Length: 253
Length: 311
Image 1: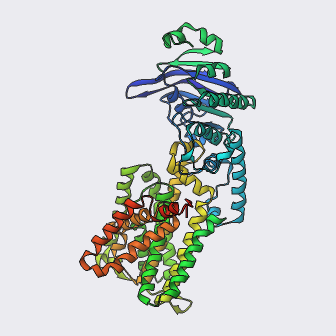
Image 2: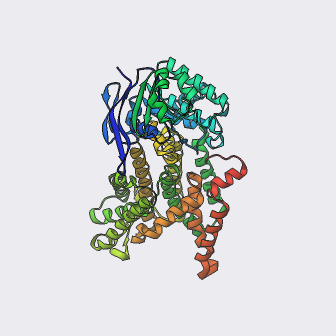
Image 3: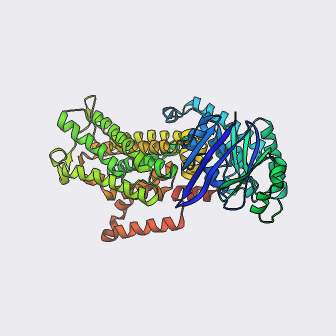
């Protein structure tokens, strides 16, 4: 069974076909990359896969179940999480609190219990804090756990988003340009992290412009151009595809 | 632990301190009014400061609490305290009912919609004169507890202070819980909150209901304390004062809400020396405070002291 599947997905914005008839499937684990020139519709496709946009056409399946048009919080409960190209950080919180929000689904949410200072709630909070700390350690942010998120560098915030997504223990993780704005060392660390996560059995869908990273990490590459899939296959095959070369107009792929 | 008890403890010390430092029933009366409005401001701050949603009609919920406490005993002979409970439940239910459709709006649209809600309540109170006495208002039956008629500045001081402390404790508990964190997540980034599994519409409505319940309790207390209610309690000006208390004292700060309530309630009493310039001076103070202490009085001062925490 595929983890995530798009079946003829499309959406229009003001009469412009932003994404049109996109179909692909991802394996239950491993890395699938979605690449394409700027404006190809990669982020729009991500927004539809993660429930931020409702697809105008087609279906989205998660582990075989039709989840088309389900809101993000329901998809999260089904095991799908994502990060954002332009950061979506809770800037009024510390790094640790950001990750603790990611654990929302793992917490008990009987509001009545939160109205009074109950010892049981204290204990749960302590456990949540520990889980979040562990996740920060995974992405190498343990040292800055208690700093305000607003004081962290860009590369750190990218990893903070990943930690926040991971603490929920998703089965499918969508990463929207995780390496954008990162230096070579940060990109290398990120690649290692993604490789490890894929090895642990996570299905990762990656939108990325860093071709070296895409080619080295991906099991499968889907190429979008002007909202359509123009190639789909193993990294080497896609690299050799004439249509892909044409779309990138001479850019070395 | 500390986060939940620090602010209620500070308030308790202040409340006891003021009581023994002051030997004037006038000041105790003003203080009781401060506590009542402080309670309403703490509740509104959960919606505005924590969850990031504005309500410009919150005095409507104050009015529902106040008029339930006034009308029900007069019409049905219900005990004023029970009448107040009915008013609080009614305020919460109204918030639950209108919360989802209204809180789907953002920014200016949300401001205008909530403004409309407040005006609607005030209009109903004004127009249903057979029940509410209309624009002239109506008397409220005196509160009697186990045969004891509650009267006197001292007693009202302690009753309102007790309710304020309870309200502060509940607010601090919410803030330090997963619920409080979810509310702040909605404030900072709705889309990231959704992706984290937070049902954004549900949490916005929850914050709206909680703040309406606080306002309902404050309204009921106000009616019992004053012994008289007028439609002004639900009016536009009162709504604006409530939101001003929150912003002036500090968004998201429980202590800030009480400080804001103190300034807007007590300062006009102290400024009567300026006679007709009273409101000018008050306006000037508000402007200067916002320019100098942009995050509101309490958070700005805390940051200055270097603790930078949320009180």
